[in-house]
Length: 115
Image 1 (cartoon, rainbow, N blue to C red):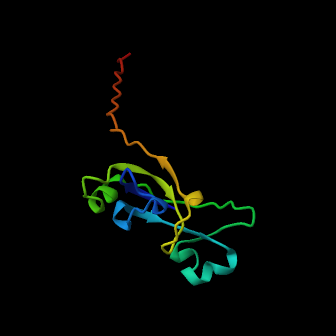
Image 2: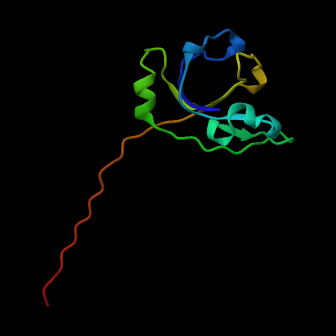
Image 3: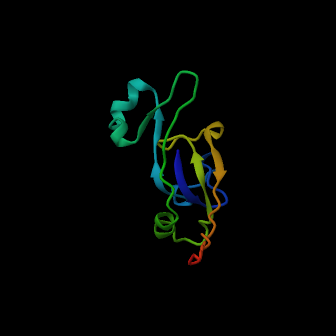
């Protein structure tokens, strides 16, 4: 799974190449027995439990994505999952959009009255 900035058509199962997918944070959900092959948790491995669930923490950084994903076709921010190592499995391809908003300035003023 990755935090990425992808093209409209990004899915390997639709023939999209890797240039349609740029990410700034990535984890690999694999069985516990295979985590060492990726380098363990330090290499980005997270345990894929027998029921198909996993828990991962990704870093969302718009500036990092924008710096890496400069092609005009890359315009969709999101959390994506897809099969690794060049595999093409449509059932593993998911996209959860992310929308960034500008932070608005918040001001507070207070006055104290002299007694």
